[in-house]
Picture 1 (cartoon, helix red, strand yellow):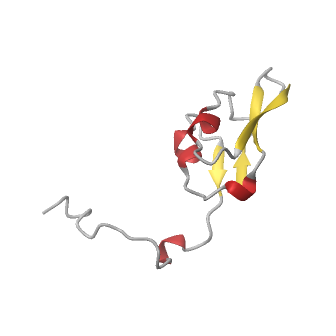
Picture 2: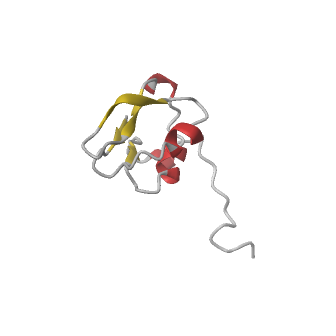
Length: 86
């Protein structure tokens, strides 16, 4: 589930351009700020990579990840990361 906070979004559309799965589209309607906001058009395409959330300069996007996602067997962390390569 992707949540876009309309009060925080300024309509820069970075999420639209950064999403490699083309999840977003631009609304033809304008909000109270006079901005055409992005909206989630194809949520089924979303891989929950979080690129849109990180790219958003206003922190207006939240990608809802399952609880304890880091415990998934498919997630591989670099064991030397905390040692800074030592």
